[in-house]
Amino acid sequence: MLLYKNHSEATKAILSERKNKYPLGVGIYDLDNNLIAKFKNNVELANHLNISKVTVGKYLNSNLIYKNYYFKPIFALRR
Image 1: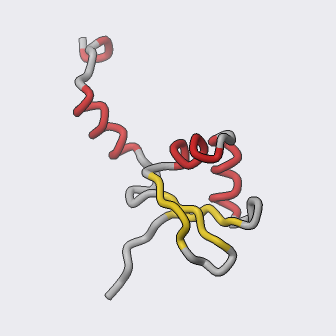
Image 2 (image 1 turned 90 degrees about the horizontal axis):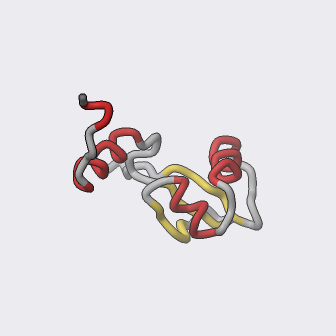
């Protein structure tokens, strides 16, 4: 049964990318809107700052300031 199948690391990575809410990643921005650091997802950002992913999600979704930084999704630049 597929439910009990052990997936390869490559398959897990593909499934993780498809499941990601922010396909281009998330970033930490300063108050002048300059990108400080970029992460694949909010969990990596949370691990980097040693805070909860729930906290990251709260600040990411509400555009609140967290210790003089914003958490925002990365968007492709339009040319």
